[in-house]
Amino acid sequence: DAGVTQSPTHLIKTRGQHVTLRCSPISGHKSVSWYQQVLGQGPQFIFQYYEKEERGRGNFPDRFSARQFPNYSSELNVNALLLGDSALYLCASSLVGDRGYEQYFGPGTRLTVT
Amino acid sequence: GQQVMQIPQYQHVQEGEDFTTYCNSSTTLSNIQWYKQRPGGHPVFLIQLVKSGEVKKQKRLTFQFGEAKKNSSLHITATQTTDVGTYFCAGPGQGNMLTFGGGTRLMVKP
Image (cartoon, rainbow over the protein chains, first blue to last red):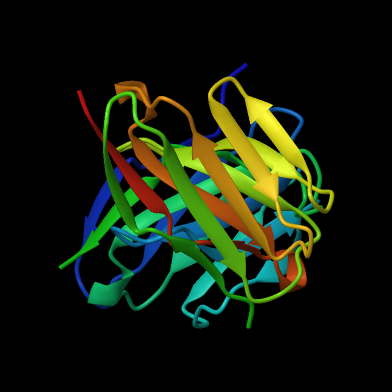
């Protein structure tokens, strides 16, 4: 079975632009979470979606938004990009929405904001 | 809010030496998970601990959950070059948030 897939793998944007990142979970997984990982730090939770509903939101500004589609894939949108948004954006899927279940991470999207 | 801290931040060991990383939470955890991230890779789930005082082993890796369910440790016996990477602990917080520690980066000299 295919693992979690993310696109694009790399992205370069300029300040003020908008970006959309995409994630496809493992087949059968209904929960998708998004994390931001700055170099040298642990992943920081952004959102969790389960059955197309937002189930959790981390401490990120309203410039960050996400949604989950009927096929359980997900998009993360970031508006008005800042230099500080440069990071690896990780998507993780799990079988259920309970945060106690293991997360399967995708390879990530490396976003560089110049 | 909840904080999860790990020490040390970095650890250099000679191949064959043992390695331990420690994880401490500011709040009691219902469970704790451990992940490994190879250089240039993404986090990969290693294990989940749920019970107070629980100890689990995976070959040369030993994971322990503290009695108060606020701390955990990962011990690797006789490290190998394949153990290189950053080890993260993570615990559930409010609102389905999974809070990761800062990680311990393990470097192994052959």
